[in-house]
Image (cartoon, rainbow, N blue to C red; front, side, top):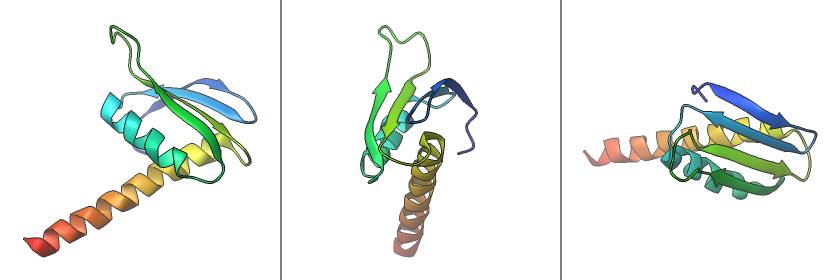
Length: 91
C-alpha cells in the first residue's frame, strides 16, 4: 500500500488505522478484508459530517492484524492489475 497510514490503535488481534485514502478505497479494502479467512471483522468508520479521513478497524482470528491489512491491500493491487490487463486486451 503506497498510502501513508497512521496507526490509531494496535493490539494482538485488533488494528485501527487512518490514512490519506478516500472512503471509496477504505470500503473496497474492508470488503477485501472480509473475504479473508483469518479476518473476524472489518469496518470503515466515517465521521458525520466527514471532517477527518475515514478509518479502518479490523479484528483477526489469527495472525498479525498489521500483516492482514497489508495482505488485503496486496489483493486489491493484484485484482486491479488483472482488470487492467483484461481491459487492455479488449482495446
